[in-house]
Amino acid sequence: MAQAFRLTPAQRSAFAANPWFASLSRGQREALTGAAELLHLRRGEMLFRQGDPAGAAGSGFYGLASGTIKSSTLRGDGREAILAVLEPGNWFGEITLIDGAPRTHDATALSAIDVLVVPADAFARLMRDAAFANAMARLLAARVRVLYGLAEDNTLRDLRARVARRLLTLARGDATQAAHPRARVVLPQEALAMMLGVTRQTLSAQLNALAAEGVIRLGYRRVEIVDAQALAALGS
Image (tube, rainbow, N blue to C red; front, side, top):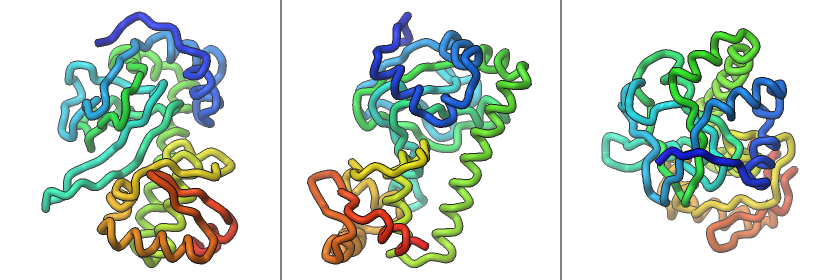
């Protein structure tokens, strides 16, 4: 349940490292976090479901303070497609608050999480400030760029290139898209396969081939990026 809170140093650092949040003025950052309540979810609990209305209980604009959460949807055949894995520092959930339409996907905790919830009425008040509304426009523009990139990958690139590009995207924090990729992607291969819309076996063959070439190194629930430049070249 929501409760009064004080962010830990690690949680403050996660938000400060997020490019979008860091681009806000100090006043905007304080107004955003000051309007929020803290919600704790256990692993496997859902923050919201696809189709939830804009006015659903607990609906809001969310900031992930700790843990990881996945955005996903179910296909017609019952298979799950993972759209993104969000890490601490990311803000999300604004679309329904802006257009009033139902939630477009499920949001499920992959671990125990702490998430800031800015209620819909507080978000509406923040949006009356032109500077904050412009900041939200930048956030949405960044999301559109990512979506166009994914659509281009699915249409124009073969699976090898798609795997390479998705690994680099995850290394930059998926939704965060930091300037410099990390050397390690911590994610089960099954989840990566769901992101790419392929079977676990098909993905494994691609990853093993990249590992044999010395581009990556495989570990338990993780991928070490050995040669980021080579991986970028494969994804071009």
